[in-house]
Length: 286
Image 1 (cartoon, rainbow, N blue to C red):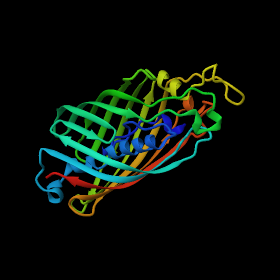
Image 2 (image 1 turned 135 degrees about the vertical axis):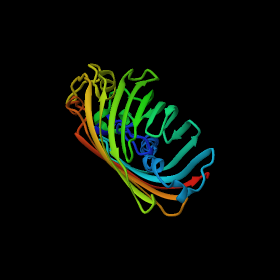
Image 3 (image 1 turned 60 degrees about the vertical axis):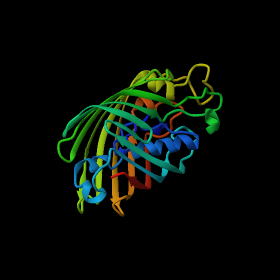
Image 4 (image 1 turned 180 degrees about the vertical axis):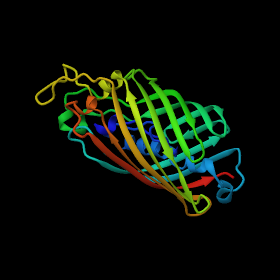
């Protein structure tokens, strides 16, 4: 379940760490995962430079719509990877924004700092029908988290710290992330690359809900397991290219390594997960 406990970055600005998914067992979860990845894409690049050369004078509402194809691992034992087409959506209005599967409000924003309140969909969980190995277990459900995000953006660099808690009472857990990225832009910002590295701490309640095995669920080859808090590491590279001043190609590749506290669960069979997407979007407004 390597992917299952991953904090996913936000798209619009390529930040992963923002709500990285657990492996999912149904197409809609895969779609949500992709949207979250989209949330973290070209934002860093767009925030920096000569956007007017490409988009023109900005209007009060900025939004984009597109289509992407996401390849997502399903880390639970017996679950296979999936490749699925998904819609892409971003919307910005003054201090409010929607980026794929997350929405937020800028409590404070300057040239180099931003402090937001944010809610996001958590890509996690499984359906016992997704793998014979999981039969007899109770379904683990995705959820919605709410929290605070602080970004420091000195030039082309970005340091992002976030803290979230479960809002629906499913895991009653928390996630705290720290990510560092650097954006390179070329040809007057027509295209760019953003590599990043990060770490996410997940509380014992979060880990136990998504990879734990209760005594009632235990069986041959699947002993009872109680999850403890974990620290996972991740890295990614995100890119964008403007075909025209409004049509944009985007893509991201992410690798995540799970803590032993997760990998030792009998329902998890990989320590690392690789996921990615490619898409095209049309930018409105301006």
